[in-house]
Length: 338
Image 1 (tube, one colour):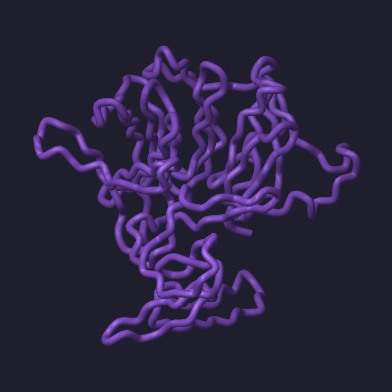
Image 2 (spheres, rainbow, N blue to C red):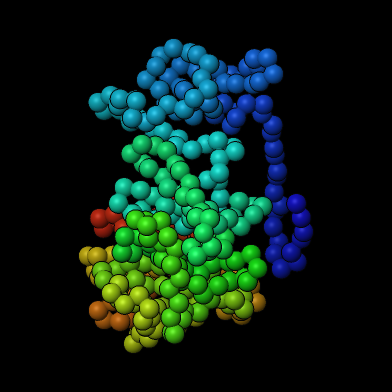
């Protein structure tokens, strides 16, 4: 761990604490850690189960639990909510950051990322109906492509599979690779084209109607991108640079770690948050801005709180590396760095 003082800022410091538990996840604060011979296991409190007492259980007995309760085994009483921690093991191979997660039919495909030690190249399938995860094995034959590990890439569902674009590689830095994974054949395909996109990381990739859009991100030379690209799903190798007719300063929209969501009701892309450069260009800053890109009109509009019913700026706090989804007429934002 490296701690240093930045003379450009005056901060209050921080307080660091840590604890060590002999049982996994300290029994989720819902059980007692007991020793049986040379092992420590969790004795869960009433209505909790799982190896770390991480599940809400319909059982009322207090017992030693070493297995995880399946979500399908628990009935939800009328008017109550049943919650399940799908994955909590501290040795869980799915623990990572900077990965991509794409839903294809009823399966979630998790690819790449960084586990704070290594850059990962593995691909996992999460079956939400059966509440389990399995890893897709690499084919031993050299003729089959398996891409290098990466993080900070973007992904989107596409034609019986999903696309992966950009990200950080271990040896080559930020890449411009465009990859396609076919979920039927379990094979990767490189989709190189003559008009390649620039190398980007922590950008966004959004499907809107028949088009897929790529926006923003960090460049190989340490800058922030404000460019918008798209391609029609029938011609994935023909990328188009979008030059809008209006409005505002493009540099103000140059961000990475942002979110971009498609709003079908307005046929618009909603850009929120991210990390960008300050006006002087020396330092980076978090953004709280919300922009709309109106697809049919080919213009950008900034949502101004002063003109939007007087909404206070605290309602849209600075944030990056979050997720965002359009739910009805609401922009739902979860997590991120503030």
